[in-house]
Each structure stands twice: as structure tokens, then as C-alpha cells.
Image (cartoon, rainbow over all chains, first blue to last red; front, side, top):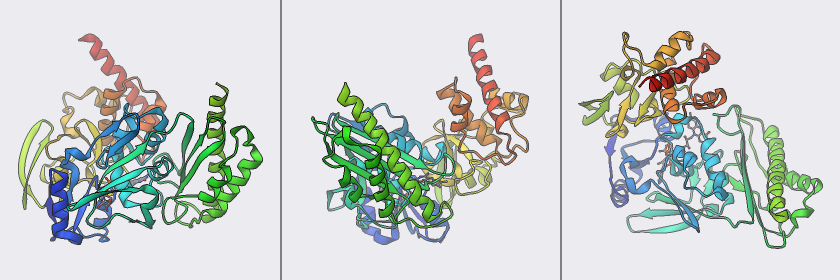
Length: 296
Length: 160
Ligand SMILES: Cc1cc2nc3c(=O)[nH]c(=O)nc-3n(C[C@H](O)[C@H](O)[C@H](O)COP(=O)(O)OP(=O)(O)OC[C@H]3O[C@@H](n4cnc5c(N)ncnc54)[C@H](O)[C@@H]3O)c2cc1C
């Protein structure tokens, strides 16, 4: 922590923030809620020669829902997402992910953009966002681009965001009425970082055939990730044909595919086993929800 | 040094700080608000909880500059020795603490809870206080105190 070199910058617009970042490049860091960055700075992992505080940019904080998309500004705090009445019920796993992240106090300062940009393996917003086909908008002083979240997480705390890019929006398409999804997290207590977290979404066509399946896990690899080999096993399957034997096979596949490590929160073996169990629970739950809709 | 203007317990104060100063340190050391307790300093324990625009946040996890333009409430802004806030009264009556170190933060979170959902169940109370560690383990008494505070505040509404 180099306290002597710390200049505080307060942009009021996105354009101003980008210009500051362009000017000071690596010496400057974007500060959102600061709940990750502060500790990294105090531990001397990160220098903050120029601290660009994003807190005072109103155009970065919003939740907008229309018939096609849920759009969330990167600076939106997690408690706003947790309690928002805007968010469509088909996207409730977004609010659930937010509501299970850390403590009420942290959720009142930590932002969704910070969670995504920090790219922790255990980031609670990552699995729900990954299974819902999220895209993120990145902006720098010369332009903007949209990127699928699937292509965002590259490695441990490493993302496809270029150094000079600001994450401004997270856009989630509203799922069809034939989709079901869930979010599951196992931690030591309700406030702890995940030992394993995951989300799964399953979409069927008019004949109850699964046309889209996504399963994403956190804390079992260097990045949050989708387990595509397991997803594929369910594609083309009729919802009524999903039985416990099939669920076991998919869960085994997940347990084989994850690459967990042993750390203070859990052992590799435990994480693998929990991944199996959570896959089973998630598929069962989604299948039940879809079956109800077939019957009604 | 840079200028900082804070609104603390309904008073606007202006002074100079180093740009990197953390809100908890400024409140405690520069303003003498010793009810802001710093224990872990890493966002885990909740002792430094204050209200920012009415919502509980951790003063140890924020730059002081981040709090500009917002209303800060610390425990000093609630009641006085001679005129306790109903939540403070309830904690005294129901023994909602032992050593008292975590109590200011818990009382502030309680204030927000009772403003948002006064009729919370014990498990809702526990969830809303999940960001506070009480090393004395007074949790059952804390939950009773919150329930008692809810009663007191409801009664005082009825009287008005
Ligand atoms: C006690 C404690 C418990 C926690 N528990 C959990 C938990 O259970 N689950 C969980 O997932 N996380 C947890 N966290 C981690 C953290 O709170 C979250 O990751 C949070 O969402 C980070 O958001 P922030 O706004 O505070 O990010 P910051 O700390 O401000 O930023 C994080 C990183 O992202 C960059 N950044 C932020 N916003 C942008 C942007 N818009 N554009 C470009 N770059 C940006 C910053 O430069 C920094 O590198 C916990 C942290 C603490 C201290």
C-alpha cells in the first residue's frame, strides 16, 4: 500500500472516466464499491496512484426491464438488484445470486460490475449471468463493444476487458416462457464465499424437447465456467424422459469435468462431490418446473 | 491533503484529509465518533457499520470521499445517555449485549430493518444481522431486543 501515491479522481460521466483512464493508463484503477479493490490495495497487490471513483456517475446505476432485456448499469449495487421489483420473475436467479452474496452491508456498497470485473472463481453473479446468455458493454475513449459473457472470463482474476475499458452495462435477454432456471450456492454459512456455486437453465420447445441447456459453475476452476459436455447430454431430450438414471449420468459428467482445488474453504474431493449433488438438485428442480408447464 | 465535506448525524462538517483515508478512520479519529468500532478492518465482522442514506454499510471498506453528499448516521446520532432511542432502550432492557463492542453496528442495522420491515420474524432478523459478529455470542438476546424494539416503536406510533 503506497499511501503517498494516491490521487483521488471523481469523474461525473462515463466519457470523463474513460478520458482519465486513457491519460493515466495502468497507473489508474477504476474504483466501484471498492470491496475487492480496497483489500488488494491494503495488501499491496494493487497500486492506486490514480483512483478513479465511479460512485458519482449516475448514468452507470440503473435497472431497466423491457419485454426483451434486463439491463443493469455496472455500478448498480447488489442490494438494489436483490430487492428490485423491476426484474422479471423469469430472471429471478439474478436477484437470488445478488441476495446470497456476502452480508447486507457489503451488498449495500458492492456493485455487479465489480463482481464481474474482479472475475473471482467464486463470484456469485457469474453462474446466473452465464446461463442466461448475458452480454456486457465495454467502453473506452474511442468507442464501445459488446461481448458475450461466455468470452469474458479468461483466467484467475483475468478477463477479456482491455486495461482501458470501462464495463458500463450488463444485458440479460428475457428467457422464453418455456424456460426454467435455478441458482444454488453452498458456503460454510449464509454470508460466506461459495465453496461451490452454480446455476442451470433449461429451455424446451413446444413439444417439450430440450432445445437449450446451460449449466455454469463457480469455485471449481480458475474461472466461473460452463460445463458444455454435461449440457449436451440433455439437449434434444424430452422433458418427460428425464429420469434419475439420466440425471445421475449428467451429474457424473459434471463431477468429472470440474477442476477444483483444495483451499481453506473446501477440499478438491468435497467440491467435486458437491458439484455432483448440486447438478442433480438443479436438474430435478428445473425438470419439475418444466413438467408443470407441459401439463398446464 | 484534499477537502472533504461530510454530513454526519445531521451536521455538515468540512475538513482536510489525505485522499486515501478510509471512512471509519475519519469518523473515529478526526471526528471522535468512537461508536464506530473497527475490529477486523476487512469487511467481515460488521463492527464498523454505519448508516449511509439510511442503509447499513461498512465504514472500514469505503473511502471517506465516497460518502460525500450522503447522510451518515453513527450511533452518536441516535440517542443520548439521558434520552435513549427506543432501540437502545430495548437492548438495555433485554440484555442484547455483553461486552458491547459490536452493539453500535447492530443497533444501526436494526434501525434500518425496523424501518423497512418492522414485523420481521426471528429468522428474518437473524438474516438481516448476518453481517455482524458478536464474539460474546449474545445472539438470542439480540434477537429478543430487536423484537422488543419493534414493539416499542409500534407503540410510540400508536400514541401519536
Ligand atoms: C467480507 C467480504 C465478503 C465477500 N463475499 C463475497 C461473496 O460471498 N460472493 C462474491 O461473489 N463476492 C464476495 N466478496 C467480493 C466482493 O464484495 C464482490 O466481488 C463485489 O461484487 C465487488 O464489487 P465492488 O463494486 O466492490 O468492486 P471493486 O472492488 O470496486 O472492483 C473490483 C475490480 O473490478 C474493477 N472494476 C469495478 N467496476 C468496474 C467497471 N465498471 N469497469 C471496469 N472495471 C471495474 C476494479 O478496478 C477492480 O479491479 C466479498 C468481499 C468481502 C470484503
